[in-house]
Amino acid sequence: VIWDTALGSLALCVKFHRDFLCPLSPVYAYEFLDLARHSMSYQDLEVSQRDILAAFDFCIGSITPQGLMDELWLALPTLRKATEPVKDGWKSVQAEIWDRLFDALIEPDVLQFPISLLTASAVIDGLIIAIARYYK
Image 1 (cartoon, rainbow, N blue to C red):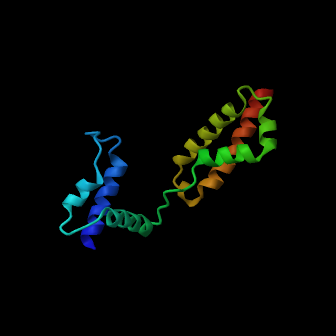
Image 2: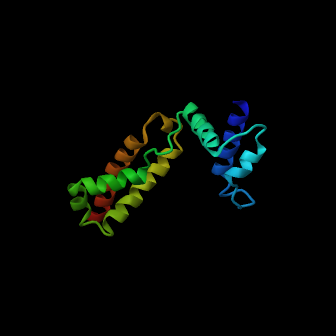
Image 3: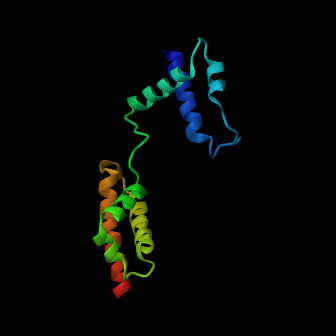
């Protein structure tokens, strides 16, 4: 169990950091399995990674602000209608939304709020600001 956890942790670490740390070469699952002190299958490696992520309540398929904005755009015809008169429409509103979200990132208590609530409030603020700029 300890080796499974150790290899799972190493695999997760490499997955999260290999995109920007040198060398930028792929690391294959069999290379991790070669490090094991006992017989370990690919499935065992995957299960150990899932167990580690579950222990931290990490959800890989979590919601993102862009995904939520896309869903709101598709679900709300009133949102589409409200952005029609604005120059560059939804694109300029999204720029305002992202500005609000990036501003929220530097606040110390940002982790107290779910992504959906932060995004929804940024959508409202961004829409108001974009419309106000248009009518100014």
